[in-house]
Image (cartoon, rainbow, N blue to C red; front, side, top):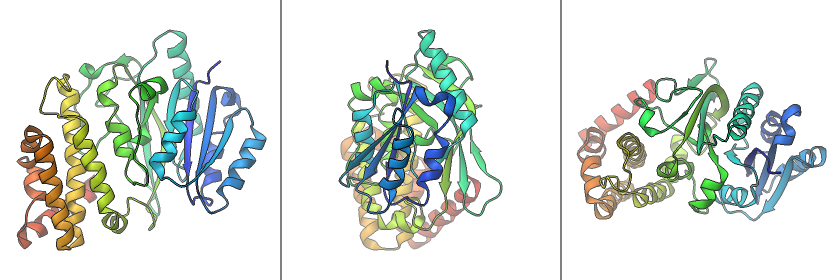
Length: 341
């Protein structure tokens, strides 16, 4: 009998956080319902030793896969290839989950399966566990997705600015991911954006559970979302951005017929493109400004209709400036948005 939920934990150099992550997945009364695939992505530290302790203690639940380094996306690919659960979740090894929320999610998935109401995507809340911040910000979807029932994109409300379905908040049906042949690029950061973006047009049935499930640990200097780190990895951010632009021409209504989904995907692609552009501006390097301009040209060539909407919207006008005053204004807008969102 298949497990209910496959949880993939990509691991690279996180020995100081891994036990906290894996401990949060050890809910005794539900261990038989989950499989935890700990993918050691060529990590040179003691992570594999830590992971093997859990495999030895819970051999029916924990599976340790040791592979050569291929990056976060390749670790997710490996996990998906080996996953046998009906549903699929990625939990980064420096993050963790809430035990009570995990119980609720497993109970909900079990009930949906028993009633033959399987969904393609289950959404829950995530919490910013930011270093040094006492008040933890919760990203919820109470204003967008009707709770505790199976819905479609037609039932969705309006997403606020800064409110997106991220890897932290989503659980996908495993067979759907395999059917659409989801494959993330190797040796590339920021592929979590592809992970949540690419499957969306294939999602038909959705369920929202209003629980604060995923705890997103953020604020370390070496983290991939640190501003200085993002600037150094601008090429990888742009690579992900281009792939997202390649997948769907959102100006063609036949590609994504549902209006609400199409608008949400436009907004998501817009914010990713703005981040790419903003990192180039913040770098203050002409070589990076050239990369920003090349990105916008690429989108124009790939999908002229989509480019027109992105480029001549408010964000597009701000993020494509060349004059020094315009760049300062763009930076100011970015700093304000950071404070607000």
